[in-house]
Each structure stands twice: as C-alpha cells, then as structure tokens.
Amino acid sequence: MNMFNRFDRHAAMFAAALLLAASHIVYADDIQDANKLFKQGQHSQALDKVNGVLTSKPKDAQARFLKGLILTEQGKPADAIKTFLSLTEDYPDLPEPYNNLAVLYANQGQYDNAKLALEKAIRTHPSYATAHENLGDIYAKMASQAYDRALKLDHSNTTTKTKLAMIQDLFSTSTRAKSPASNKTATDSTGANKPQTVPTVPAPVVASVVSAPVATAPAAKASVPGKPVVSAAADGSGEVLKAVNAWAAAWSSRDVKKYLSFYAADFKIPGGEKRAAWEAERKERINKPKSIHVGVSNASVSFSDGNHATVKFHQSYQANHLKISGNKTLLMVKSGGNWLIREERAK
View 1 (cartoon, rainbow, N blue to C red):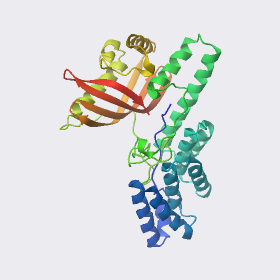
View 2 (view 1 turned 120 degrees about the vertical axis):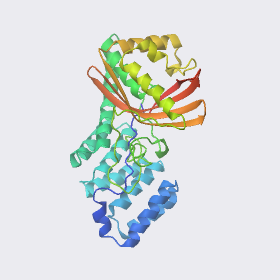
View 3 (view 1 turned 90 degrees about the vertical axis):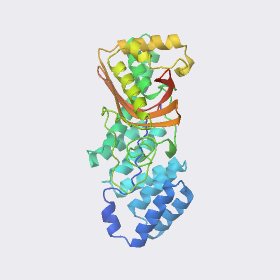
View 4 (view 1 turned 180 degrees about the vertical axis):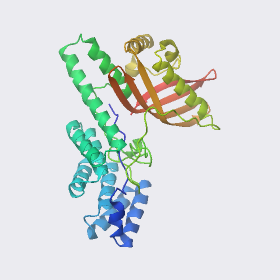
C-alpha cells in the first residue's frame, strides 16, 4: 500500500533565517548551489557541495537537511534516517526533519516509529498540515493491518471485510492492502510542494511517508481535501476534470450505474478480476454505507495525445465512521466524446 507521498523537501526550515544570518555569505551560496544541483538530479555533485559546507560548519541545519534529502534520493534510507535523526536531536523544534524521518520509517514498515515522529512534528508545529495528513495515512495503514489480522481469525466477518475493502479502494487499486509500502525515490513524489509528497515544491520532504523534497521555504503546504477541482481551459484539461468531478459526484451520491459508466470497456481490473465480478463488488461496497463523500482536490492533467490523459489528484473519502485520504492517478481515454477511466492507481 503505497500511500505515503508527502516527503518535505524544504531545506529552509523555520530557524533557517537565523542560521543563515549567522553564516558567512559563502556558505549560503554553497547551499544554494547544492540545492540547485539537487533539483537537477545531480545528487553526487550536490552531496559533495553539502559535505564541503559541513566540513567547516558541521552543525549547519540547512546543509544537514539537504544531505538527508540527497541520501534519500540516492536510495540510502539508513544513512538518511541517521542524518534526519541527528538533526531532530540538535534542532528539536524543527518539524520537517521529523516528517521526513517518519516517511523513511514508514517505507521500511516501521509504522510505530513513523507515528511517534509525526506526533513530534505536530507538537512542534500544530498547523503542519503535511504531518497531519501523513499521520492519517499511518493510521490507515495500521488499521489495514489490524483488519487483515481480524479476517484471518474470523473469515466470516463481513463488517471487517467492508472496512478493509474501503481502505484498499483508496490506497491500493493495483496491490492488496496488506502489501507493505514500497520504497520509492523522489521521482514518484506527489503532494503539496511537489516533494515526493509535498504539494508546493517539486520534491518531497522525507519519504512523504515516502519521499523528500528540497526548497528554500518553510514547511510545505499540504493540499486541502474536499477543495473543488479548479478546471483548466484551453488545453482541454477542463473536460477531463469535469469528468473526474462527475465520477466523484456519482460515487458520493451512491449512483452505482452512473459511477460504473465512467469506466472504459477496457478498464484494467485490479487483481485481474472479471469485469462482472468487479462491478458486483463495487456495487456492494457503494451500497453498504449509509452515506459516502468523495472529495477531489489539487488535480493536475497531462496529455500523451489528444485522446489520452493522466490525472493526478488528492482524494478524500468518508463513509459512516471511516475517513481516509490519499493521492490517486487516473489514466483516462476519450471515447465517443467522453473521457473514461482506463486505469486507477493509488500512491
């Protein structure tokens, strides 16, 4: 279940201004150069720059934070964890290192450690939306594991099956909910700062509870679940977004027939199920709750050609006492003048 995509890549944290004011201009220039190299994907060169700064200023918070991001992108989670952990010990009031640390822990299946790290991030900065959302994802993952264990003990528990299925719908259309979160690099990022999990900067802050982006601003701003999708016009993305909103509205109104009409005839059924079996299962899941609310926010559309589009957005789902949110990707195809879903992916 790969749902942790809000890794904070903001190298300029709350105390950064004070730290830089006390530094010689050459260090600020070196950090900026390293950050630029990092964004360009030149991780080895960026790491050399950062290490050069740390040779003279071993306690520099910005340099150490950026180093943690680079190590994450290089696929060295153990070293990245060590870097972020050390940073939280020296600068316990900075929330971003805790968030990124949580993402790395979560990618290794250490959900208890991830939960503790996120709780610390929120204590230091209660309005840190990214950490709150990541914590929600952690709870959802832990709930999924608990439901899975419950089903192993009682296969006939239909209520537990429904709850587990709901989580699977949101976070795992292509893999089973009990699958461990996969380690992803920053290129998979989604979210507020476009950190591998943060929405306002291209790159995530700690493996979002999957990746980590770098930027010269304070904590990344997370998306607001439920905010209406803003349609884009000239490039035709408005039509695509209109279809996505209508799909979410049909789901929310529990109009199964209309909901299923948004799926193309060649829709890729999760797990290789037969179309009829999948539709029957969807009908049961949609009709089961007394009410459903599906929100779509922060949507973006890209086209491979005039008839094929990829839509990425943040999805919030609430039914009865279950409330979950996560990032989703829809592969859309234009058929008969209508945009239909060919494949769903949860990240």
